[in-house]
Image 1 (cartoon, rainbow, N blue to C red):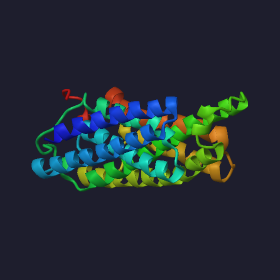
Image 2 (cartoon, rainbow, N blue to C red):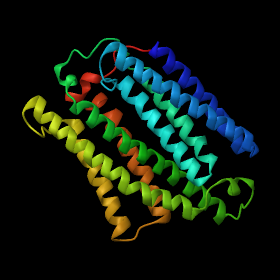
Image 3 (cartoon, one colour):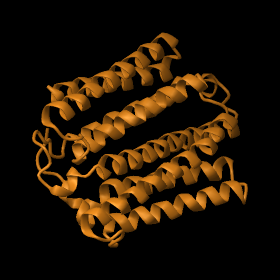
Image 4 (cartoon, rainbow, N blue to C red):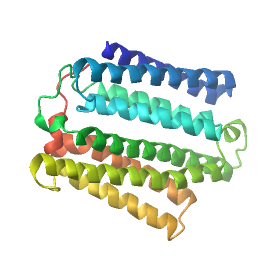
Length: 278
């Protein structure tokens, strides 16, 4: 049943993606409102999927890439809806909804587990703490990347004096830069807690806090990259287009660390790799 919930949520996000693109093309507020309702419905149905997996199968549903990507998508949609409410800017959904749907489609190519984790390491309570904080940080970085993308596009429109309907749909440059400025310390703090809890989990599982596993190494590289962004924001005063490009580059690093490292470099985290499709 949880797989049915997953599929229904995916359909909601896909239709919402079409709706938000239609909003960009038509400026119809009714279309944007309908798309937001679809996203909210997807969040609810997807939450039922998590609850069903946890109750029926008896394990916290974050032990595979299928579950992690599904939860990642859920966090992106939830965070987007909060930001959309505060900024009154539905156009963010034209990127956020397809991004979430894409995460779920990628997740569908990984293993779908219907029994409790057989690996002893996955029975630890450090697992949901570590994965939740890490994915929450990634979700914040995702929205920062969306804001950075829209900032660059908005600035391009302004410089070329294409002040029309599309320009008016986009948030102001100041608003998009504020999204980056406020999101950076939040995402960085969540990432820090995610890495620290992962180190504590590693100590309880393997007797050492850090083993320079490829995933650990690239997580540390990602942490230093965002630490540098915090420094550039606060000390050097970087903002605007520079900050927007850094948000995009940082998100690329996040996604490589999250998906690419285990697939290409192996390591402890590769035990959660692909087994079968949905």
